[in-house]
Image (cartoon, rainbow, N blue to C red; front, side, top):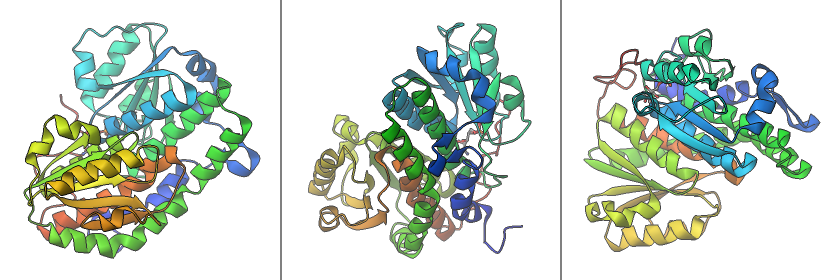
Length: 366
Ligand code: M6R
């Protein structure tokens, strides 16, 4: 059932071109300018009129929420707050009938996320679910929602569920922005076209799998890792660090790159691997300066860059290229090399990749 792969995790990583396409199937047809999320249709006005969206989730799903925050704010100009479900539920949060909550959960069974939904519901908020497991508790507890359709995810480390969540949330943000009249026809059409090409672009990242394996070999016994990114790549940095921690048991931290000089830079020396998300986007020049700051302190830099970048390769120890995509869709490609890097390191360390110690696939107790 692993389809010839050694682990479910690597099978699921390689499935992403298809799972991402599945999360758009029947919803998005770029050539026709068509984008419709069936389950949300009756609530589109509610979403478009929302003053605020509160996203609740845990773990990797919370990272998908951080990506969505950026997209909803940028495209639809709606204020978004992303909350750890466990913190939200115990905080007596300010929430009411005018609020829209989006709960994100692969399993649909996460206890804290479910409790956060029940709390928000009791205060009159409208709740949407973005779940992978059809008919799950969270899917049933919400007023409406959109399934991610990534297919069963067996590996404890979430991979294809994350990219499917981001794809669904991106479609939601575009659809809501369009309903609000916040997008020009051109921008709208362009985004649909670009989103439709993502499965092909993800496929192209796999061409670097052997190179990523070589990098994994070099850093197999590193004791720490830092992941840095800005903007949409900041949640990707968090996600890269979480993947590495979970399955290789290497201590890793993700930070917004600019936060580095407020503390973590003290950790940098010739033994510290630093993974930079340095794709060509609005924060490219800023990231380049952050790379220089790390190199000046002899950190060992692995940079995820956009294909064709000629500036960063001369500055760093290793580069992994990803294809150029629309800036707002960057996380869907930049997260892929980080999934592979953590996978190969964990395998080289002999870890139980699919079932890491102390972890369960769904966390049904708080
Ligand atoms: O099923 P959920 O998406 O609600 O699960 C949330 C987290 O428990 C989950 O993402 C966890 O962090 C994963 N093991 C990450 O790989």
